[in-house]
Length: 328
Image (cartoon, rainbow, N blue to C red; front, side):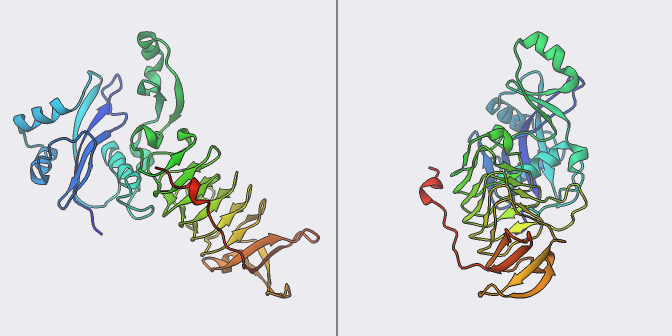
C-alpha cells in the first residue's frame, strides 16, 4: 500500500543555535486517512495542510493550529510533507518515518531510511526533554537537577508513541521506530531497535537488531541475540517466523522459518557447519547453516559429547502464555 504523499504537524525542540533536536508529531495525514491525531485537533484537510507544508501562508489556519498546541520559546511549530518514499534529507523526514514504523503504518524494511543517521542530531535525552549536548551545562544551571537518561540520536519510543496492547518493562530499551504489534511483551532484558519488531503477539527477552522482524507467537529467551546489518559486515536480513523459540543466551545469524527452535546458548551464524539428522537421529549430511535459511520445523542443538551443531526435525510446538500477552 502506498501511503505517500504525507503531511504532518508537529513541534520541535530547538538548541541554542535554533537547530532542530527532535520533532513530536501531533497530526499526520495522507490523502485517504488520518494516521495520527494525538490532541484531537480539528482536521483541516489534506489539501490545506499540504499547502501550509509547501510554504503557503494561511494565518487563520496557523493560529488555529498554534492555539491547539503548547509551544514554548525553545520550540518551533513544524509543518512538513513527504511526497515520495525517497532517502531521508532532514530531521523532519527522519522523525516522520520513525513515527510511521512505531504507529505500525509501515512494517520494518518497507520504507526508505537511507541517510537517517546523518539527519538525526545526537541529543541528551533528559527528564525535561531533549537538550543539545553542548548546551547541557547551561541548561542545568537554569533548570536545576536534570537527569540524563541517554545520549543518542534516537529517543525511546514511549516518549513519543505508546502502542496499544503492549507491555514494555524498561522503556529505555525500545527506540522510536520500533514496530510492536498488539500482544507483544518486552521484558527488562529485551531490546528493540528502530526499523525492527514484531508482527504479532510475542515474548521478547532478547535483542531485536535493526531490520529484524519476529513472527507472531514467537519467544526470544533471556539474553538472546539477533544479528543486524548496521555494522559488522552482515548483509542478510534476519527474520524469525511464527511459533519459534530462541533459547536463553542463544544467537541467530540466519533467517528462520516457522516452528523452529534454537537451543539455549547456541550461536548459529550463516557459516556454521551443521550436521543434518533425520527423525531417527541418523546423520544425513553436513551443510552450512545458511543453506537452511527460511526452512520450517527445525530444531538446532549442540551435541554435548562432540560439540557439533546439529539440526533435526522439530516435533515440539512453541505456545505462548496467553495471559502474559493480553496487555489491556
